[in-house]
Amino acid sequence: MKTNLWSRLLDLISPRQCVVCGQRLAITERSVCSSCYLHLPRTTYQFTPYDNPMVQLFWGLAPIDRAVAFFYYEPHSEVAQLVYDLKYADRPDIGEDIGRMMAEEMKMADYFAGVDYLLPVPLSRRRMRQRGYNQSEMLCQGIREVTGIPLITKVLKRKHFKQSQTALMRHQRQENVADMFELRDATNLAGKHILLVDDVCTTGSTLIACATALKSIPNIRLSVLTLGFTKT
Image 1: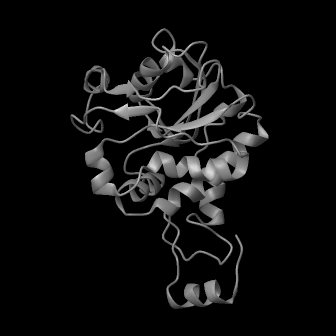
Image 2 (image 1 turned 30 degrees about the vertical axis):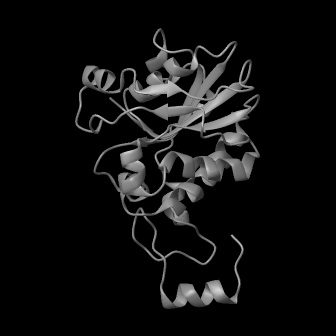
Image 3 (image 1 turned 180 degrees about the horizontal axis):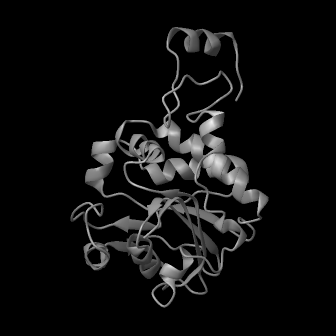
């Protein structure tokens, strides 16, 4: 993080806080303090991207090549506050900051090898109006800064929004997002490797729906990266 006199003065007047523990951030820290960053419950799935509990969710259901998540997500935990603030507290900066952190670690495992484009899971128009930004796109912004991989946002459209996935069972989640996405612009995507990016994967139903909409593109390759993975 680049610092200057003005940013130091702002930090003195209005101290920034870690979104996980609430402690004051150092001038060089972004969103998450060094201690909380060190203790994030990492999955380390990037070292076994073709066979881990997350990628197994897609076997036989969607043409997903490999899949990993940065950390384990548990509702009401300290780390869940990070995801909550990213989505509901008007903090798009968290997505960019964590996207960069996540990308640095995934890059060390060569997870981005062969990926041509980053594709954030789209929000419905209603959610975009309410939130003002797509949290998955913010994650992509941070990933792009580290990897240089182009970001595409006009490929998929979310046709409708039924209800939040949060309180639904696995089969209800699949029904809730069935046929939810439509392919809009597949120009020059034949034979490309697309990395789908989302905030949290629980049953994989939303990502399966995205993959279903994309699989008609000739010779398309799809992989997945999420911030959190909910252990069942």
